Image (cartoon, rainbow, N blue to C red; front, side, top):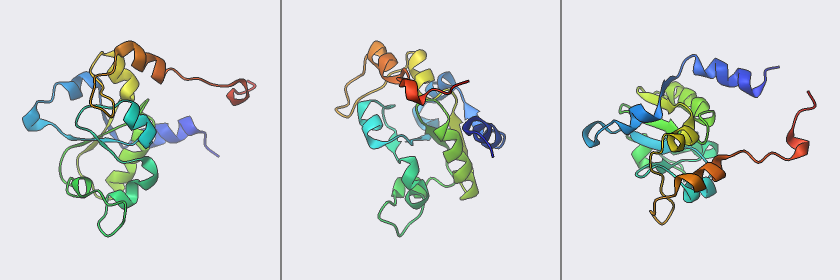
Length: 153
């Protein structure tokens, strides 16, 4: 049996990662498709401007034609640069690994996720396309664990 962190570590061995500042330095002509794999409510709260939302739960069918979840922009990006993002950089590792298995040739995970993006004070927008204040995003990304969710250690 493997733990969540062990699964991430194993998947990360085969996935390239990019730091937020390196992604932010991409200009319009070399900008990758940014795929946010968080849940829709997370995406609506805040995301990188221009990114598309493809929740992890529908990823495989979103990457293929002939499904209700098909996202043509994503299907057509199979041989183009794609950066996968999530809150912390964990879900994006898993997604990037799956996309590679599905034939995506240039897929990268955002190391540190949107928390790291926000820590570097790069802009996030909400569903109304308004910029989200850094402090509000800090609060949003701060884990809120309940006592019963903590290990006994």
